[in-house]
Length: 191
Image (cartoon, rainbow, N blue to C red; front, side, top):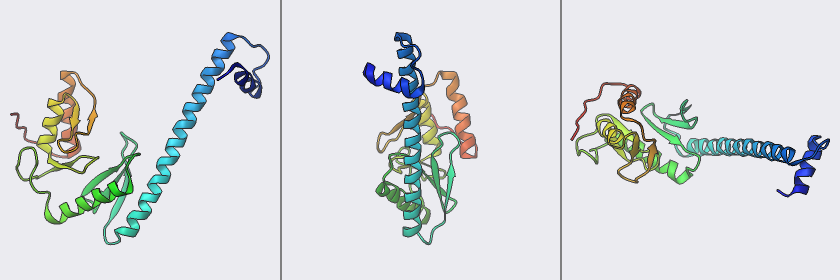
């Protein structure tokens, strides 16, 4: 931003009594803060509009299924609960085709069972799903992915990674948290 643009911004804010370099830096910080706030509001509005459009399309295409929309308190993203069984997350960059593919895969899994885990090749008793590709794997393997990744989980299908590297003592705390979220004690098979 040029000095004349800064001066104009300062004038509109009523900051023209004294003008020096420190005042210029203060104004730049203020403008950056306002822009960041505006950017966050724009992203939030975009996500809300996208969510409304997706809900409308779901109602139109899936009339016989039950969908519940909840907000995840950790991520603030909307999760779509399908027939009170399966859940997918509506990410800001998700497209309608991706959401439709996820829903179709979840509905097929509800009808036919989730099949075998691609990691351990055993039947999936407690399903965990990648939010990007809807790949299914068992809870035991998910926890092992979390452990071996030291807090970062990487999907074996699409290589989508999430999480952050944790110190060793925090990994076991994370495992306990995962077990609580999954709702039951999980047998660990470390290979």
